[in-house]
Length: 310
Image (cartoon, rainbow, N blue to C red; front, side, top):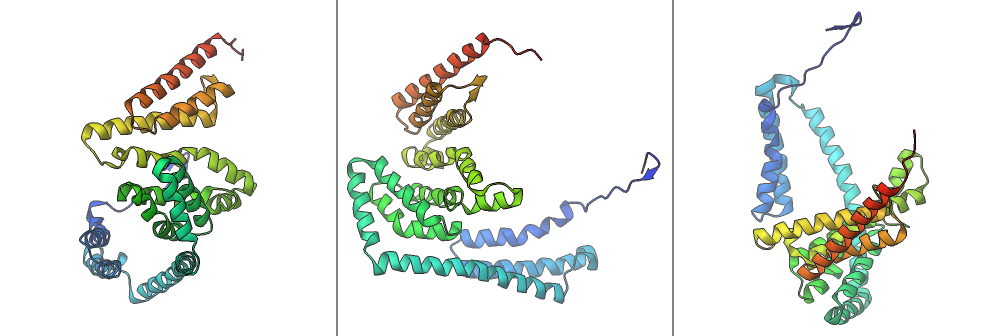
């Protein structure tokens, strides 16, 4: 193909359908894990499926898609190095868990405190668990942070009458949010290094923009329909509530709707977002009324402002 006198080569990738068999290892891995097999056995089945797919590649595409012994050996070396990188934080996680649960009374005291507060004040108990998950997860990878949270906080949250799925998702979410929470926001520091920006400013801005993520785990606890636990009607209503709550909270963070939102209006949108966490119809209706009223007021205010000429 010529364009302006210069030859332009168009590269066409291989068709997708003849390569769908490459999904077999992933499918086998998921099937074996779901069926109840151990992770080690599921991993071995996945590796065996990869070798079978490699043999199939030789007959489908010839040597072009076939991976030789040297390349397989290089893949094994890279896999061993990646396993070592995961094993180090996992071992550190085991040390932390042993210190917290076996060598000190921190876990017992923390459990008693959260349990006592949760009897009358579930929100405060969850707030303490949230802070604990983020503090312990700041210097750990997500998987290790989740393991620590499961050992320390999931049994306590479940003792307050919370479902297992909701408790685990609560801990898992805050284990992730710890990666962007100052002062030890590893993900934000990495992004700042790539962009050449100030690390602390990047961490603070990242936490503000992800403020919605700090609200979602509480929705899991107070409205389990978000996790598909309930009837279709309950799940649909919960999804709409979360959508509106996320929208109001995003307006609070950005401070803009048609025009800038003054501080009192941002406070009202935040109250509306917080009110939508509860599945109670009265609370949700009041929150929607507050949020909608604030947006209508600011829309009329934006129309009353003089237009800026270009």
